[in-house]
Length: 237
Image (cartoon, rainbow, N blue to C red; front, side):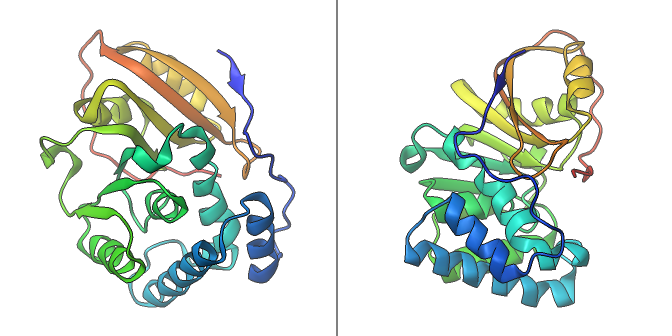
């Protein structure tokens, strides 16, 4: 399986003690976006920090590393989307908005966040409304969302790959593809997945984790029955 190198090379050695200001500067260096876009990311960071004190939307330990651990990790998908302005992106299990809200801020034209947890769905709606993002939040279980199709399907730390494909397939059209952020078990999950599905897959090294990869998956077809397991948050480095 070929590896695809990230279009934008990002240092893998950002120190864990880097200040938020330094992380923000590093993000701006690797993704030279407009002042308005940076302002939206700043406001997103502020809202997440504020809400997280009450609702624990993300692990508290990751807040000091917000720009690297969450923003940069999400943004690395953006160069892998050929025509972001005209893309309809569906994000499965959006949580606190990674990667969905970051990609919407960067310029993906239409984003759908599927998130069944009430407090997280309300947070997504609040951020989207305040920042004027092209985001629709579906506050229900992924399996319950019907009639929605997308060009790109994303997920981050949601569940194992066989379940991800089963969740993604109903939202895909012929030319659609998936971008999944995965950790060190990616190869094992790909092997397991081929027991139930045929698909085309390429791997791109993660810019933010030495053991992480981005899986680009398309042409998905089921070949055998797979017992569905309810989505759960899996660990990524």
